Image (tube, rainbow, N blue to C red; front, side, top):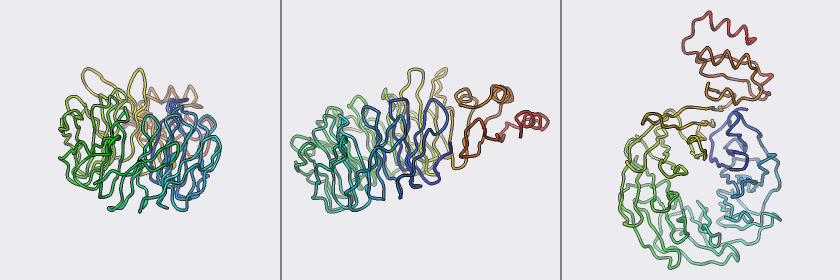
Length: 413
């Protein structure tokens, strides 16, 4: 029920059952039920830091990769490990499912990209040619191509046939370390972000650079296409987020507010909001149309994923300190309101009044008392079921000592 012991490296959302998968330097993969507080399953099958995690498009499988040179497949419903894919010679740094969900691509420090059959767990093709560690990989939306990037300055971005493993070509001129690669929604373009100060957009058919987006200072850390595919967002060490119009090649918005490098980005599912996470230990929510900062979540840094919902937007943030937190984002009277639903840190589970009705095992009396007394957080000992845990009251909004004492007595502390 608690958070990771070390930093969270990656998080991924599975629409089947509303699950979030998080992986960490602590060698574990955790499954979180986003509608009910707490971790459903913790896996420690990996023996070294887990570097990346992805959910299949169908939402029934999870793939994680690790410094132990393996990729592991997990069942979303049960959390059981279904198989181990092992033939890489060094750390597996990145992994991705094909859009059809029948294939996995992995990149490794052994300088190879490998294509795997999900049903059999066999390695179908070993793609060689990179001269350094693989920094990132991506499938085209149609699933017919794979793009891979090498980490070293002299390495390149390469395209491969996802069915045969054949080499299709290199993006000529893409030098310097490439941190991120992304296909447009129609698969006709590839965007690359690198250690330099420009972004490049490439034509997949000709492999020619068709747009160079200039404005950032080095380094560019993350890039992501909008859900509509008409816009590209980029994050940089220059403390800004930039929104680019792909039809014109011009920067249509520069989002100022962060005080340090911006490391990761995520569009909401409607594309009206974008979340940015920075080394300044804040996550900022921006209105895409106006470029205005709508909300700031302070004192945390990590990876962000949006969860689709009909009633509100939800964010899950996997943090550098190992915690995993769920936030509700709502619009009230023209104001953007961000509310913590729950947060799991190393050794404890934090609940807010908004999420207490979702907690399994909390007695009706405790729930009523906590709601009435305005208690903000409830910390629980790790490793036990909620019903048998000894609650400890904290951050009580300066309740009178008599009320605190009486509340503790009723709960049984």
